[in-house]
Each structure stands twice: as structure tokens, then as C-alpha cells.
Image 1 (cartoon, rainbow, N blue to C red):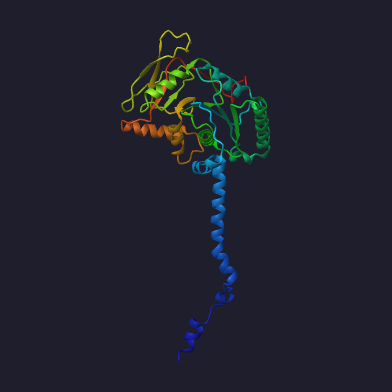
Image 2: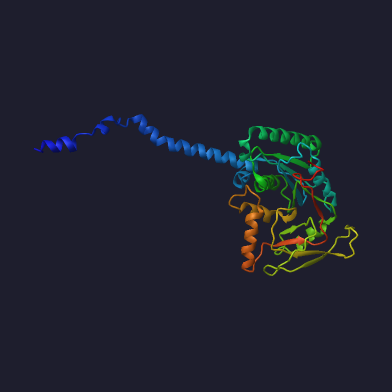
Length: 330
């Protein structure tokens, strides 16, 4: 027989224990199924989010159910846009769209994808300001549709989320990959950089075809800046003949491409598949790609390697319209 002290202090429940309700069957079931319900909800959310921004796996899985275009164009254009004080006016992006006439040899049927990015979440702290921005952005989007609705070559992609440059580009590229499977090259343009001088599109394509292991990206300059060109890896200056269609009045008869250590989101011409995989490789591509890609290029240069970045060397061919500060548009 155990001492009474043992029974009273050890075997008997404490006052706190006596107040704790026993775990019944319903509580036990809820403890088991709640994590499962959350996992199912989170998986559904991620699937919907992937659809919204253009997830490669989702697109590939559903591509067989879509009508693929039989168009044999080899080049497409993506123009990213987001809210600026000049909205709802479209004058700025109109100049960018119209400036494609300076791309000598580019077919008039080239598909153009214009992305309209959502307002960043941090802006929603100011309700009145955000309400006005949403109204202006809606007016801007409506004006774009009004101008291009009957043009089968212009596609406007509106995002309810803020995808930034990388997410917007990736979303457009997933659609291009499906509906324009013959596209091999891409112009990426920003909504406030327009061409003001002729660029030999046919020569650019020819360079890509003749230098498949060297040239992946060709950037266009927008001001007279003397860049210090450092050769990464085995890349060297490329001098390529202009196409017969190119008549810009230059005294020289060849195009110059200089290898560069610099990656920029300013207007550029790229290999489609290289660009797609490069954007996809960024851990979080809902941001300006130039930050992580510039670091990547710097790391490769330190190893005497390169991403295949070049700069188009005739005098600057772009103008920066700057919708946030240029009086013409604000």
C-alpha cells in the first residue's frame, strides 16, 4: 500500500489539470484534417497564381488543348507598361509602338504584346491616391483597346497583380511560345523608350544566325555615353555588313556590335528561348531582371565567361520619354 502522500501529490490531478477539457473525437479530427485542408487550399492558390503569371508547367500541360497559330513569323515584340502620371493618356506608348517603323526589314505582321502591370500592393496604403491611379490605369487600358482592338497583330495583356517587368515579360512569352511557335527572336521595349533612328533588323537576325554560340542579347543605347567595353570570355567586336534594305545614311557599310559587361532592361533584341530560360532562372522574376542578371554577368566575367551580351554601336538610336518627368507627357 502506497503512502497517502504519494496518492495526494502524485496520482491526483492538479487544479490546472482538472480544468483542462479532455480531447474529444471532434477536436482530434479537426487537428488532423486542418493541415490537410490548408495544404489543399494553398496548392489551389498556387495553381491559380501560376495561371495568372504564366507558369511554364501549367502552359505546357494545357498547350495541347489550344489552337496553335500557323504563323511563320520569326520575331515578336513585347512592350511593358505600368502606371505613370501621364495616364490615362497613351501618347507616350503610342510613340514607342509607332517607332517600330525604324526597325528596317521587320514585317508589318510582327506580333506585338503590350503588358499593363497592376498597381504595387504598397501603394494601397493611401486609398485616395490608389483609387485615382486605378481610375487612370483603367482609362489608359481602355484607350489602348480602343486604338488596337481591330488589329490582329496587337495583343494587350492586363494584370490585376503587380508582376513587375520580369513577371510581365514571362507572362507574355508563355503566350508567344504557344500561339507563335515559330518565333526565334524578340524585341523587349519599355513604354518610355522609343526608337528615333533606323536599326537594321535584318542584319541583327543575320548576326544571331551566324553567331549562335556568341550573341544572345543586343542592347540599344539612348544617349551619347562613352562605355568602357570590356571583353568577357572570348567575345570580341563583331563587324557585320548592313542589309541592302538599310538606308540610314551612315558613311560606313557595316554594323558594329561591342561585347559588354552590362545587362540592362533598356530596349534590347534577344534570342527567344535564351531569354525565356534566363528570365525563368531568376528565383523571383517578379522584379526588374537587370539586378540579378547584372550580378550573374559580373560573376561570369570574373571566371572569363559571358552571357553573350552586346551593344548596338551606331550612334544612340533611342529617346527616353520618361513619363514620370517629361513635361510633354505629364
